Image 1 (cartoon, rainbow over the protein chains, first blue to last red):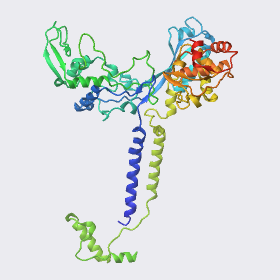
Image 2 (cartoon, one colour):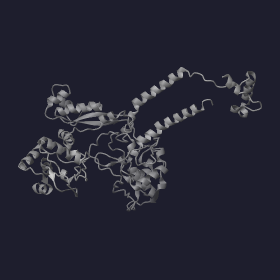
Image 3 (cartoon, rainbow over the protein chains, first blue to last red):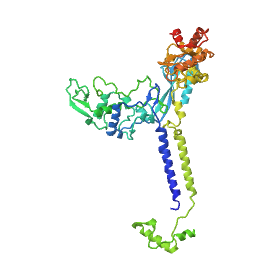
Length: 306
Length: 229
């Protein structure tokens, strides 16, 4: 050991450098993110209600994250430009297209683009190109809007309108991202499925809902009781549907754990519009997102605990 | 170097420190016979690091640097793959073209000095007795006549905003601004922060200016309520 001090310093420096860049600096950046207001004044992410917090523990203990991820990936984003109103200055609108006339016949621009409004006048555009086109159409008196189209297989599967970002997981500890997809991604499960009764049937026996589902049945979360068709089921019970025209013969009564898990699953929403996660605005104003369990439908009674 | 070699004379009967263990006894013997042949223990000497190693390290460093530049998202915590910069994200943000009146008003709000009392966040200041604009029931009332009058003639005396008393200070009259400018700054105030109220029209400002033409004293809250119920 001729150069023991140099060796020690070298090792210390290497370890310190990797600790700094891989642990400390990311913690300084991402670990300090806080709940912040989004459009509409709401704070995002909103805290989960108590029952859903319990459900997160059930989710964790049952190992749901072994087969389900909770992260939506995205490979890019492009813009479409839509025209909703042509306006009165058709000549100017035509000039934006680089054409001189906006005739009414089959050859005319309005037959080509504006037979049905809103019409798409540009696709696969970058942000600046889309804004340029919108500005041109606006100057010509038409009403044009840019529409953001997120790209990627996860988005196409309908698992979310945007990618998942660190802000989405602020209230999760531990963050159950998952790394294997034997089942669908659950980042936005609560946005897709709001019917608690349907969630209970899914948990009780998934292949009954989705053919070929690999999800094991979680019978032990429920109490199964016989059911005579025609009688009124107990308030907390869910009538188990049967295949074909056979009348149902069973009802299931969810346990505390099942209720908590369903509350947690309905609270899984990560679709807010954030700077780091641009998304298209929903076509209609979305209902205020709450984490309260959604109203149950009348036929299958699944009530929150009293 | 000779001196150092002399110091490392082998000690008979004591095995080499660095080669303990039964498995390496052959190595120990080889070393000991080498020591016996040469009369000294072998030592590690400094040799030059090959230049190629530096070249390879430099290449790795360059590649890593390029990778961070292209994929690192500017080391910004708000830039996630597949996005590469906050500029790109800004270009993807949905912007609705701002009304030119609001743009003008935003500039005036700072230029005229509204922000020195009402603050940039529109929350006012209790210390100077300056009421908030953000969320204020006065600002957001459907009928903008009262706030037009306040901007035109100034305001003095106590005023109750959102059930809290304010008004130890005095608001200066800004009647020297043009009708368009007053409409702009009020439209901005009515639609900034989380405020949402109809824009103030130039014709409204004209009307109030005419109505209060002969007046020079600042308005008071009670008077405003009486004038513009």
